[in-house]
Image (cartoon, rainbow, N blue to C red; front, top):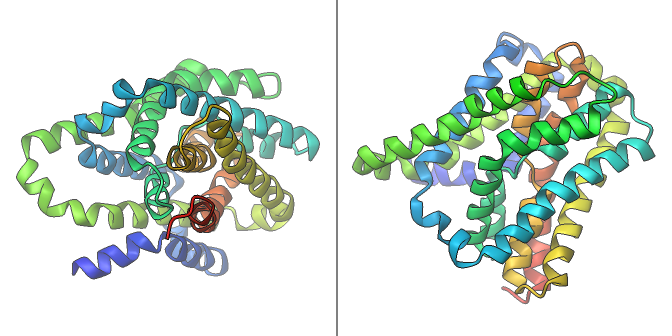
Length: 311
């Protein structure tokens, strides 16, 4: 496959995700043959790919500019969980759907945020560092936040969630880092294709979730869509505002805005299917968020670029 095709697929993640979602929705048999149990290994593959692209130097901003990282991570793990909880109560969402929205809100930033930040001409180094740090914090912070915000409504086993996140996220990233170190020459050759790989796997995960939940989505699509859109817009807006309040440059505000607004919704659906199987609708908000935040992120990138006076 040529680099042009790989680049086009990675650059047009929104089109790919929407197309796969439409196929899964209108022709669910296209993905029904793939079991929900494959979501965890597939997400692990995406995280492994992320590990292959990371370098120790990507974390230099953590040491050189700790204030930006601290502000960004606080915004990440305060704004999105609180926004999720508030939206669930304002819309009076059923327990299953509320759990799904809260899971999305408690997850770390998504890998697609780095691409969107690049398009928006934000501080990509800060975006990459924030994604890495929030992902490393996720095994500890995500289960604790889910317990705090949803523990009264559903049983939350934070130990099992911790182990699950380590297995699906942390270990594959570490494996990717180690592989990249020992096979750097080969990894350099395949690096241009890794964003395409991640795009196709993420789109496939969404396709699997949608195909297995078509009737559920039909029954609750409007209210979930409203919750997802509000959640994402609040994250993008309040993330930018947080950066502005402490006087960060437009590029750093852009990075924080996108990082906060775009969640690792694949992890949210993985946690929903693994730990809350008795609430099948809990996986739906994550799937819808995956579709929406790529679309809204592309729009936000153009708006932020104009706000910041970038061409």
